Amino acid sequence: MTNSAKEPKKLFFTVAEAARVLRVDQATIYRSIREDAFPAVRLRTRYVVPAAAIEQMISNVMESGGVLDIAEMTRQRRDAREFERQQQRGRGW
Image 1 (cartoon, helix red, strand yellow):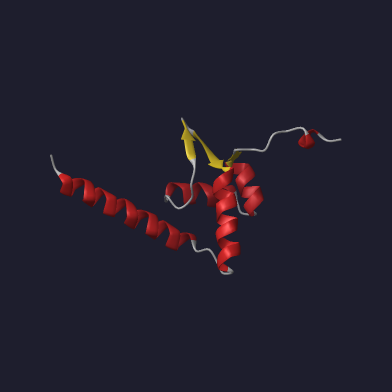
Image 2 (cartoon, one colour; image 1 turned 90 degrees about the vertical axis):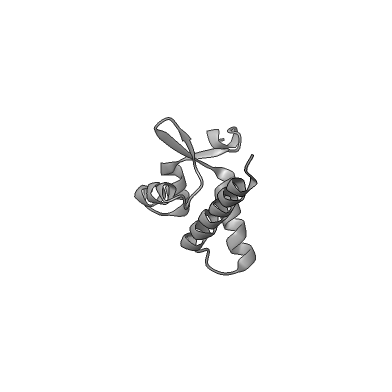
């Protein structure tokens, strides 16, 4: 029996672990995080990636049956944030 059978399900991955799961270079993950195109939690100088985020990406790809475009996701997230900022400004005091 291996230790992995006893370990609880991971809630977060290190960037290195996420890169291995997604089969990309760590630099790709870091660049995507900095571009706000990939979900992560920053703990001081370290990033961790929510396992749920990777699971959600997989689910989205499976449901759509197509390609998940990270650039498009980034644009939509930025647009939504900008819209929210505009709404906050319009409320005033």
